[in-house]
Length: 219
Image (cartoon, rainbow, N blue to C red; front, top):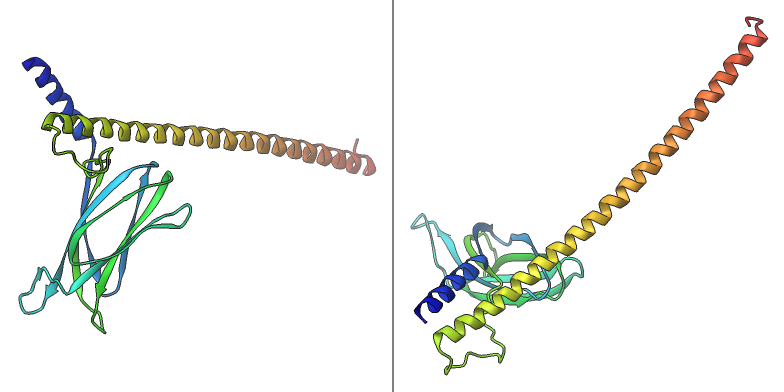
């Protein structure tokens, strides 16, 4: 039984390591909006946490400021469908689930109440992809489940996310292969057309030269 528990723990560690976290920080100047693109498969769970700090002239440093909130906007680039449009405080969390595979636009801007917004903000954002801990099958955590059962359920959900990611990558490979074959076919046909045009041009030039030489009685 001890060996079985050790094996399960090792497997959990491997699977949990596959689910990755994307952490970054950037700067917002006034009402500027900063956006970046994430390519995600369908039915992917994304959990984000953020914290903002504003520049203080008196302290000459960045510090937390509850008066300056953050506007979060997420949309599907293919359909232009807004998934998240949330006004939040200077720190907090947000989450969403993708409905379609493809590129998704994640944008952040200040949500300040001041008339003239010239505030400089440093924003920390951490995104966790494929984390199902916030959403179990029954919609809430069952307090009666022991820790091992909860971890096994998390592992199953993470494996499902990994499979969706792999399937998405395979679909992208198929699309890329089809596009490559289509491009190769067009290049082949265009090469054939060029050779035909070049052959007709050479034949016309030879005929024209022959007529010229005959008219000048050179041949």
